[in-house]
Image (cartoon, rainbow, N blue to C red):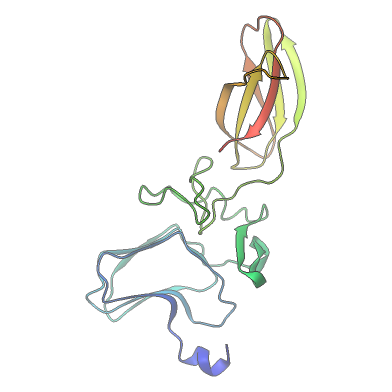
Length: 206
């Protein structure tokens, strides 16, 4: 947009004479083309919310509008997102200040891909709930008496699941532990009182 267009701009998302409007979990990268990411306008716009939004521009209340703001990150950069030039606004691993940093909202249970949120201890700021593309790696396996200890690498905030089976080919995998939140380091899971032969695998938790 031109500088002249910006001079007359308002917000990218506007609630206008709209009471009770919830503007939550959006991702907006405006690159300086508009003044505000979100704008609430006029006195009839009351009891609204702007929560857990990821943007590179501020949220504005105008003409006596009222909205509760929380969990927003308004210093977004292109480097946090997969490919903004083609509107791919998925979070990258580098977006550590957005991943797992938002309080979960009962009214927002899925991201813009339809994937369940939160994935981890907290939700992610913005429209995308980060999903690691890098599979976990089992780094160590040991026996401690009759217990088996499985160690695997993790990404912060990413949930994992450990499964076991008695037969790799055609065997039925059962869950040993699920929804284990990654720390960025190695996590250990113990299978108590192992009887017979067991196989283990670690998966991203869906």
